[in-house]
Every structure is written in C-alpha cells, then in structure tokens.
Image (cartoon, rainbow, N blue to C red; front, side, top):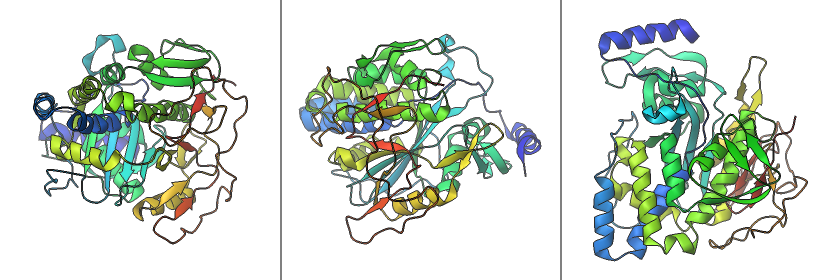
Length: 436
C-alpha cells in the first residue's frame, strides 16, 4: 500500500475502467482562497448594491458560464436557503492547479499538481473564518479514491506528497485526503488555474501589498519595489507563485507570502470601495465562475450567495490564515506536527476561534504600526515604511510541543503553539525578500 507500485496498479485499473485522467505538470501555486472569498463577497455584493433587475441579470449571466462540475463523495444534498445566510458552519476546499489550463504561456507539464490546497472553515455562528494552507510538499496518506468517471477506484497510498492528489484521483481525491488528514467533512470544493488568478485580480482592481525590500524573481517574472505595490494581472500571479524571491526560498515561505496577499485581498473585498461598486463585484463573480471548476454541490449560485451572507459580517481579526502545522523531514519534504495539528483541528471541530501566538512566518513580517483596525475600509497607508523586525502577534503562551486545552465559553479562543504560523486578515504585513 505504498508509493509507485500502487500508483501503477491504480492507473492500470483506471485505464481498464475508462479514459485516463489528463496529466500535466508542475509549477507553483498561490491562488485559492482569495477566489472563494472573492466569489462569495462578489455575488452577495451584487445582490446588496445593485437594483433587483441588475442583480438578477448578473446572477443569470454568471451562472450560465459555470464550468463543469465535480461530484464529491461527502457532498451535501440538502437544499440551500433561498434568502439569507447558509445555516450552520461549512467547509470549502480550494485547490490551485499548476496545469495552466492549456495556456501555452505557462509551458508544458507532465502532471496536474495541486500546488495550492486551502481549506476554508466557517463556524456555525458565522463569527469566525479560518483558512488552512497545506504545504504542497507535505507527506500524507492518501485514501482509496474513485476515478473521475466513477467506474473504478485508485489504491490507497501510505505516504505521498499532498500535491499529487489532483493528478492521482482528481479534485474528489484531494478532498478525501484532506478529510482523512483533518477529520473534517468537506462538502464543497473547487479548482482554479493560472488564468483565473489574473482575471480575478484584474476584476477587483488590483491588490495592494507591502514589500519590505525589492523582490526580483526570474523564475516567475516578479519585479516589485520596496513599499506599497498594487498588484494585478501577471504580477499578481507571479507574486503568489514566487518561492525563490521571498523569505527563505522555501515553499513554507511562499505560503506566508500568499497570506500577505490574501489578507490584503480580504480587506480590499470588504472595503466600501469594492462592495459599493456593482461593476467590481459583478466582475469578480464573473471572473470566478469562469475560471473555477466547481463541485456539483457548489455550482448553485444560491449556495454561493448564502455562503457570502454568512461571511460578509465576520470581523477582519476573526478571519485567520494559518499554515497546517508541520516540520521538515530528511527526504525533501515536511510532515504534519501531530500535537499542534490536533489542537488546531479540535478547535475548528468545536467552532472555537483560534489565536496565533507565534510570528507571521518566514515569508512575511508585521508592517510598522502593528495591525490594521477592524473597519473594513481601513488599509495600510501607501507611505508606510516596512518594519525591520518581526514582532510576535502576541506573547507566546505555549511550547512548540504543547497541546493547550480549549477554554470554555461561547466566545472562548484556543491558543495555537508558537511554531504555528499565520496571520489575520486584520493584520497589515509585508513580504520579506529572499535571504539565505
């Protein structure tokens, strides 16, 4: 039940059952949750700020361009409310594919890898949202996955990197793998490719990001200067994909860099300038559904609008981006840090808010002036200088190996160990250039 032999047998089984899954290849990641949150805020924005006829046309037009859907094993079948927020909590997985969607500009690849895998968890009371990033090189066990045509199945594997799941068994396999890893049920999912990142960053009018020093990355074409930069199009994609240009040059540093972008994206989406502009919100929604391959459970526009209603009033400081707890291994990857991961997942299953006690990670640092305010329209001043040090978000209260007991009370928060990295959407942070 290990590695290549089982993979070969699964491919043989798939071949006998029907057409094989297309395999492309490699590159980097960095796209997702921005899109889920964009898509969600966009459609609810259309309904809130447009006239009824405009909103109706927008939703109809967007719905007509939804890409083909993917059936998930644990998809919910219950109807979504026609009006108002979705009932209870929910989990949505977004995978960023490196295939390029056939666009020759991104080169030719031999496999389709989910170089971005992110999970959005929204609590049942709609007061907290947590976005968990799973390192692409993290070794996990992969369960038996159905083939995409539903006529066969792939063998389980005991230890493979998580970014191989998309090529191995499609989006449903990525979802099953993350469900097994986290213990959470994930009824909704989607896949986005490179062109989607470009179109969506254009639709929102660019995302302002802070950079602590000049970053030039010949691998992705990124070229940004120290200070505030408004990124859209190919530069937004390059910023999300860059690994060699930021932090310590690792994939973990790149996750922190993504969190700088995503937190700013959330602030941008929730700003009055975006939500009061029907052209922007409609453009975001249209770009999202044109470029995201959705699960069947997420292809209904009413479902997405209901999720949006649940998300739109969450305080920025209660939107937390966190890297799945991990540590380096000797064979070119990382593995889950079980105690810390158990703390995180127990908190999410109990719908507790989480508090980060460590720094913002190896790819970013807190901007001068600390965190932003909770007002949706607040953004870091364009002239704000980046800090030279990385202050912790709070005083560490736990060791790296401790497992804090969740405190009681409806609004209680669980402290994560200090070696678990991340930030809130309310924190204004700056990306650090690569340093050896």
